[in-house]
Length: 373
Image: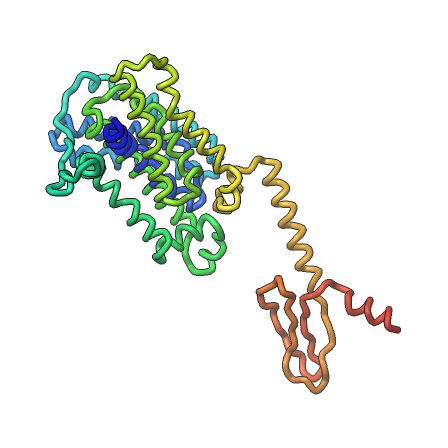
């Protein structure tokens, strides 16, 4: 029974895990996409339809990823190019995807396909207990397992990952380096949409071999929540997705065993576990939120307070410049920095009696001289 639950956890959680990995990249760049649910549904329908037409599940998986990417492109354009609110736009895209797939998917409800089937890995699948759990899955599940360490390496060990994370933390640094942060965010959102669509395709082409209306059943929303639960770490997001899948598998196992438990309780169990996990890590994750994403998640009042705080800091930095007379025998400009400032002030020597700009509160030297006099 335990082996069945663990096996079902991986099979059921793969679609959520793929969507969460894509959303993680998007949020690391500073854009949250609540329309992940819509991208998953678009990928599920696109992948299933192309598999029906071509008979090739690989083409179906590719079409599913592209379908999810296309829907995420709408979100990226509205948010990044038109300045729309990320949360409101994401919800709109989600409901748009639900309605769009319900309309165009009517003719595919009763269709049958030959999709991906479990492919046992020789020798490894024969290992007692671990073999069926880890090494007897469909090809998309194997690819998702390889994706997690690859994504971790790219995000935290390569220049590309630094660029993506910098876009979500300090976009002005990218500007100074000659990189357009808007372009970086566009690509991150599109990549996230592709993985969400691929997750939806795994759901229809590999996991169920069927298409039904709204078959994602909230998995896209759970994927967004899991990114926060995972503190924007790929491995933790994978574990969270498999936890959700385990709850799904437990639901099916309990029903097969004939245990007298309310089916409504079993249906809501995966979502309750996700909420509990979020409550446990709520305090810990706040300090790890990407700065650009934190500004989005903060309310309008908080954003206003942040803007006022930045204005006060700019005014304070302006007042810190004080013109002081230099030594006549000194031919170099002297400048002194406070411990918290790391930028250079412009220097302009002026012959014998040149001027230097010192970073300290205006009038402080004058007040000290007056007290001494």
